[in-house]
Length: 326
Image (cartoon, rainbow, N blue to C red; front, side, top):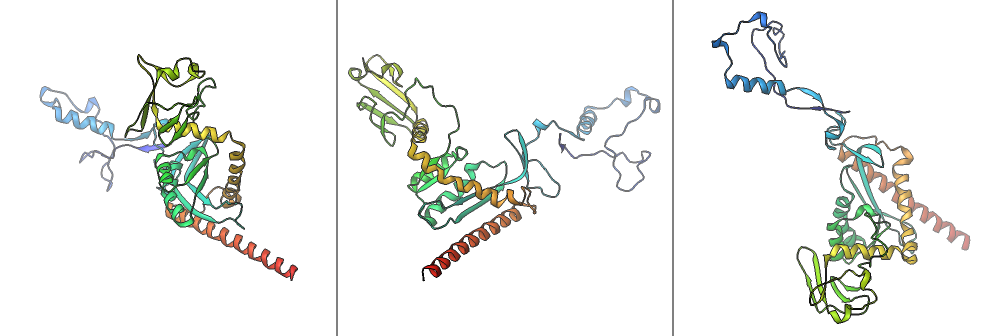
């Protein structure tokens, strides 16, 4: 249980015993029944009752843990640190996202982005700030991330920059095996080129809300081998479908994950996990600094050091190779 301060108003009655100390303001004052005799003239008016009610509620107390916001004060020495619970463990402070090159043709890897924020910030929000810069500064075309980086703004930016996202996992429940995947048809963006049986809808719509819909001719759907588990629904004069385009995108990601070639490609991301261990866990998970800007600058300094060390090792290796062959 953590403490939280509610309100801040206090009441101070002049001349009450014990109030002589400079600056002393009691939270509440009480008068025993023996010290006063109630009469009709002494009955408090509505304004006094209202003020007394306010005073009774202005106090310092404890809130239940589940009622305290994750951005509440965690440490009086660092008012920017936040709270986060992940995998049944509690974390206090900040989080860091790091991007590095991982092309197999590169002689060594370089850290290209470091982003630090409060640890209750969504991973996707952090990546959204860097996606465009990475494309412009490094010529990024393939971005390997885990399922926690699913983010609409990042996905839009990646589409605009012609960057393909590769996810090591996908959040959410996998559809039932007996249901046809929305990745089964051939798609050109949001337009269905052909259904799994090879037929194109005679009418299609794509709405600003992100919803897509279409109509299929009955002569194609009646008796189709896929009819029983297909996503279309029978209407009086045709068959129709309708769903969010995001469902198609997620289905296509799931299909790529099942591809052995994609799994091999995703193995390139394993290096960044060891990088996080090298950057933080090797020296202990606790930062030596307080305040977001100091933690960020320390992370950037560490990244610069890692890049210099990697470049130095590469140059030393090249020099030794030249010496041995010379």
